[in-house]
Image (tube, rainbow, N blue to C red; front, side):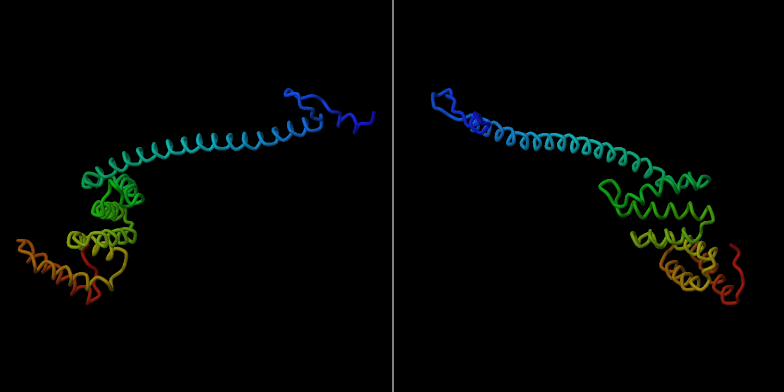
Length: 207
């Protein structure tokens, strides 16, 4: 008997119907080929779900840690005066808030305060150009800080050699002073007027 005859030999099925061995083998092979892709898809889905769960948990943990770190940094910024002797620490804490930007726990006003605090730290470390940039950012975020930061901005500009911008800034500061009823406004305004004269005469300021 040839190989073809053997493979095509009829055998009774369980239902009594005569089927060939070749049909049995074809049916079995079709089932295996169908089951393998389904099993592969299920495996990929399960692995994907596990990876997603791990990443989600990791992200949630990092978010919690960031919130705690931001809260600690905000406390440092709120008490920035106590960091006057340690500008590096204040700069680091302020940068945490600045790098995070406005979030559910950090308002625009708080972000502005962080820029102002980092500017103070940089000014104390004689990083005058960087300090000026941070004071500008603080005032852009919260214009209400303009008056309180005006002199600090004037100081770092003078120290960084930006003399041409000083007179307009001093004039603006004098204008703001004239609108207040502060007891020291008169003497402070006189000092600023003297600064303007000294700058116009090319003299150095006693800063």
